[in-house]
Length: 207
Image 1 (spheres, rainbow, N blue to C red):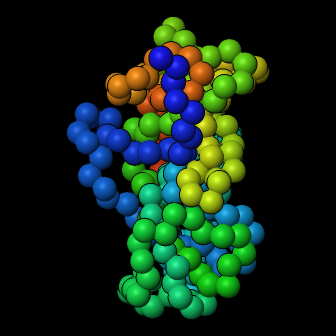
Image 2: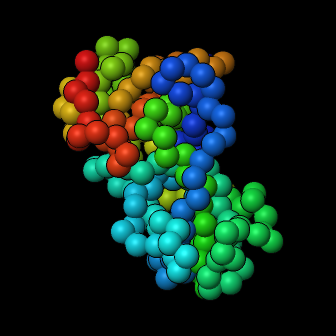
């Protein structure tokens, strides 16, 4: 049976020590003027600024460079600034995406522990990733959200072959052990952020 094509970005599933992800995440701000839509499942980076209360800002990540983590929740502040001490008061926590250039400051819950392992779908572009590449490092593939979920994928494009290179962003931890999942197009993989803003150095070499 072919793998289902259902991209949804990065989903935290467990920690490096094998314990399940416990839902913990940290609050970050998204500037009202930020001109890119953000979705649950999108990888993000630090923006280098904060809101008026000092809540650190984020922006959408890229296929290269260090990542801060992955969005697991989004909140509209309901005003141009946060309520001090409770920036998400009065707003639903099940918002699935933040539109580009919104009138209000928004907030995101970000799974930013460097030891989290995420599930992500492989794209269908080039040669599918293979069993012999587990343990190597690779990159993600940008994708636009569809109004409901993140469009980010795991790259299998020509020219993005996994390697031992320490500066590659993601570590392939193996196929997700879930029903109807096999090597090939649209396979669901487990990955760890190898080049992490809160990690040490520029990443570890793949094996």
